[in-house]
Length: 569
Image 1 (cartoon, rainbow, N blue to C red):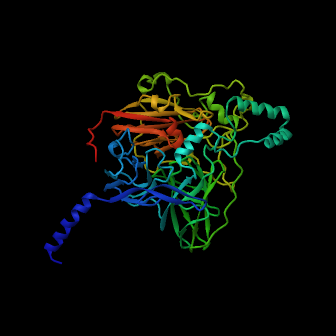
Image 2 (cartoon, rainbow, N blue to C red):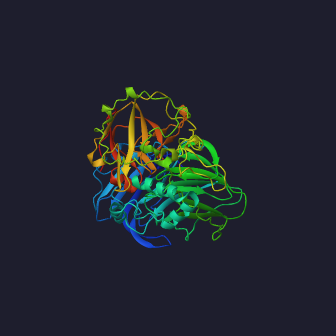
Image 3 (cartoon, one colour):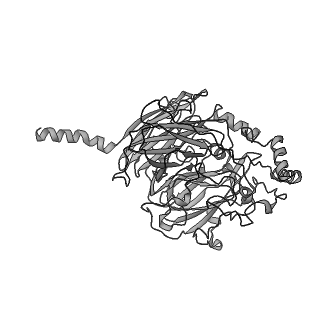
């Protein structure tokens, strides 16, 4: 090959190098077949889930999104660090994509790992508008594997998102299939005595709550990569291989407890970031979180991937097998958990976690700049303080006999996870960054965010104020902010900050893990810190679809910093 030909080829290739990866995505109405039911939904390129987008760290992504719907749409690149105009949140980042319009997203790929994308318009995401993102690192991975699979979980419901929201607003327990019955009352009365049982029921009734308020929306079919349990998504392997499984929870409302009976899982990434490997038997994946695990499979037999909902009302199931068609035993659903009075303690005690025991420094609350939080005066209008009937002695957290097994759950919580085989269950406390991205430094201020709501009226808010009535939270470029989440509700909330990393405080200083979603269990207080390094306007919300839509949502404005480039079209 002569020099002129080589030079010609080089210049022909140069534009491709500069452009990087390019995708064309259409947003379409699709038919979603779960094996239990077929329902019209929304997908990408004619399918739900959409295509897996693959990039390499350091290149530039160009993604043309064409809206074939008769309504506005958007695509949000969940967990990606990018200019705010490319974040894809209508009303905050950009206006949205009109019917018939093509919008071109273009942004640098500044990270590696497993992420996902989804619509941020209405309830298009619960209706099927989501897909996976896999980004290869510039350098070698710090762990070895022979093959990898995306395992994208979701909770497809036969009702559309709009219909579910209407039903929840009409009756918050519309989809609760685990409500306690007269038979349960009779059974408990036989064990605990009539008056003790009656007192318990009156107490919960006085709080307008139910012990079974673990999942808002039941009756779904769990899917793995778009396939229901009967359709059995299967990933193939050869005995002796290390298989990387990229778990993504794209559910609207469902936390999953994931296990593969017969195999240990080594967690190597959380929310796309490398963590010091930890081997577990089971882990809980909150809505919108991702976990990458590696399993080493020695035997030539099938293994079931079993993702059981936290409320035990449904499951997703897949298989790892050396050949197509092989199956392993599918476990039975475990007994549904019930909330305890410990899970209600957040209404009364904002110190649900023992932070001193976790090595967290005490905060100087007198130094807190409440005025700078960008919050209005707390109205508490959505809170339910009708707690007069509470039996504090019965909360289970005051006796000292029930020490927490996991500091990220209230002592005595009915939601405390336990591995099915009695082995190791992953805790946030196990997550330690492999290579800290940020230097450790003291936060410049603390912002307290109380997660509030009223289950009976199906109202969700932050600091008692719904999104439509709230002022933005204003941050200054260059500061390091410590967020304090105080969960005063009976529900678990996966809080998602767009555009900047959430440094979860697990008491490990600079080794605290980076995440994009922080799950906050009932009656707990959880801290995260954020290096404010991304100017612009960002969304910050609970990632449970119907909680965000009901008001547990905020805009964050980052002032100062380098000038941003203009928008796209």
